[in-house]
Length: 483
Ligand code: AMP
Ligand code: MG
Image 1 (cartoon, protein in one colour):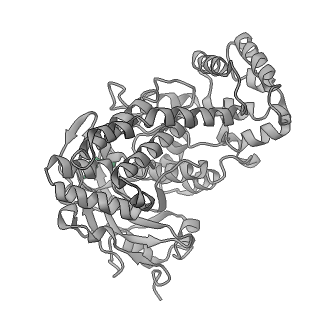
Image 2 (image 1 turned 90 degrees about the horizontal axis):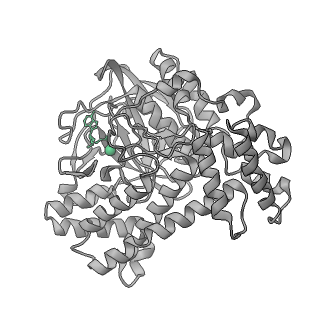
Image 3 (image 1 turned 180 degrees about the vertical axis):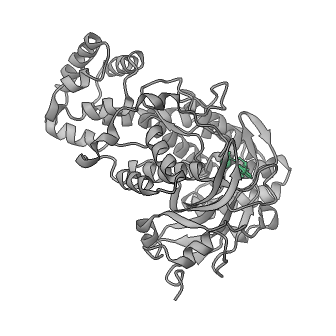
């Protein structure tokens, strides 16, 4: 019996017309071996919870089971504001769709699978370093409750890959309910292929937004949903202190999920102008600018849909973005602070909080976690996080005063706050330690972080130090696009 025999596969995207993809076989990695296998997700897909050899050979391109029909998708997109028609899966392949026991259907995509017709000057490979980052972060976001692609497994090899130094080729097995990007629609539009544009709209509607089919204007209803989901996603990123780093339209999922992990970073200290991508010289994708970019990208998508949606409807759909973003962000900030009821001066209190955090470079995640511990530990540990103790005390006095207007007990409020203020996030330095070890053949730290980040809201006393402030060497860490 093969490892695939209990799983259910399908090939809906393969049914699109020829221009959407090319059939490409993966180029196998040398001496592939598992870095990690996501047993829980595998089980949900009726795959073995232990990674069998046939899984390794298949996902590393050494063998091709009948159930895989590898294709490279063609798309385009705006990169750093400029349209690039030449994009596509340059190193990733869509193998098939697999169905979960919960009734979800995921694309199985392998990233780092070798050259394709869309590789341009690239080598078709992904290095271990960036693959570990995507692997850990996508699962970490999922367990935080942020919409994202998933990761099923991670393979390393002895295949040399040349970046600033010689590294090894890796493959991250990525799952997503769809790999359709904004850039897919842009490709159809800018090449004047309006029939294909309609074909893709109909496909997306049927497969991913079926509820919109019965609306009076199905395409408009679908665009509205994309706008709303994207606004909610961007609000979540900013509420959790997550910066994506490369928000080009080819990295924007049509499902409003975090997609294509590159030089992302979680904020350590609160700094709105944080730029996690070392190559982003203008700060286009800085933390504070993310919400604007969400709308910019949606506008690029809307423009691509203009042959099928009237201008007034495009504008109306786009106008949903800002209110949705603000509403979701404010809902999340209220949850994080436990200020659930609405009162007159709340926005002033939030404003003062953000300015206190920024001025004092306070650790963003620890601040909210410590605020969730007021019932057990009081205010002193919160003050200890803030350099200007007087200003801290002043804000906390106002906060405590404001809390008296809430109806729940301290304990109830703090309990709820601990369920939305994570103790553990994938800080850059933690990922870096795991990477350094993995590059020396030791994957135990990947395993430890993977398991730690599955329950980011729980106290894990034996791993308490993973919630510590970053060490001083971490301030120098720079993450570039060369993945
Ligand atoms: P990314 O920066 O990963 O979103 O990729 C942007 C574009 O470059 C996509 O079309 C990728 O497929 C392509 N690309 C990135 N890295 C490589 C590589 N090593 N080899 C071939 N194509 C790549
Ligand atoms: Mg990309």
